[in-house]
Image 1 (cartoon, helix red, strand yellow):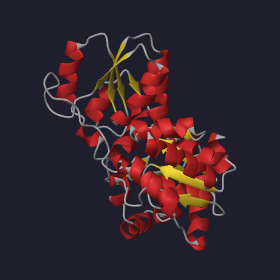
Image 2 (image 1 turned 45 degrees about the vertical axis):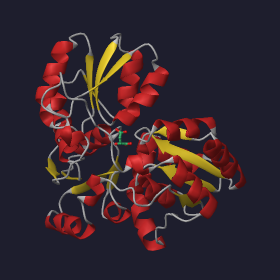
Image 3 (image 1 turned 30 degrees about the vertical axis):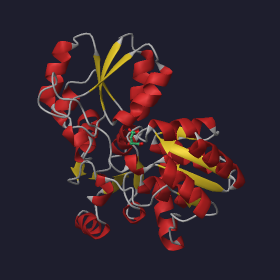
Image 4 (image 1 turned 120 degrees about the vertical axis):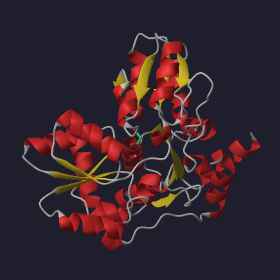
Length: 315
Ligand code: MLT
């Protein structure tokens, strides 16, 4: 509690606002809410940080989210509890290899997931998040454009399947969602036949096929609030349970299994990098001002274009 009080006071003295992702730990999400910040997906985090008047934005999430905040707000100071918090999708899509891939397919419109470095975004025509990927790809497809997609192959496959667009996919995946298992989910579904199955599209195709609802974090949260079911089996990072339970306190949430046998295996679906955001390092960065995100002006200018397109498209 003392730690939290010190963070609250430091946020005030530093003219800082805390923006947290749904996948961070509950302590962080609660603090963001209590201090007038926000808890959201990457698209809404970007929008919130952009519109908020504070001169410092503290991004509790993973590295690309801090970079996005900086690209959109070069005049603001952007801090993160730790700059070490990366993302397997980002790591699995290095700039040079990706650039080569793009060079090999100059006829394709380059669409990248927000979970990428600023350098990869700078090579793209469009940035998307899982909440707007389908709508943007649908629009590009309607205009006859062929797409080069990176980095998440599962989300890419799902968008390809639902839109019918011509998409060439980079071979990347999220280490958390990749672990959800079809067999375990089938066993769990047998135990809870009335539960609705909610799946994030970064999960493997066989798991997505079992879903009652496939969607981004905000779409899955909405499903828990609006579907009549009392129980939900949820296949995404379990950090999301905080917000789901807050908005739908009477619903029962069950973690989708990450191993073969849903009856005995408990899920451990939590991103190790999201989990690096804690109260101690949050206070530390507010007091010391280190762990500041920097994006050079030339890179920023190129990465801003596809990001701004996404924000304008979803406005
Ligand atoms: C994000 O955009 O924050 C991530 O893709 C997770 C999601 O919202 O589905």
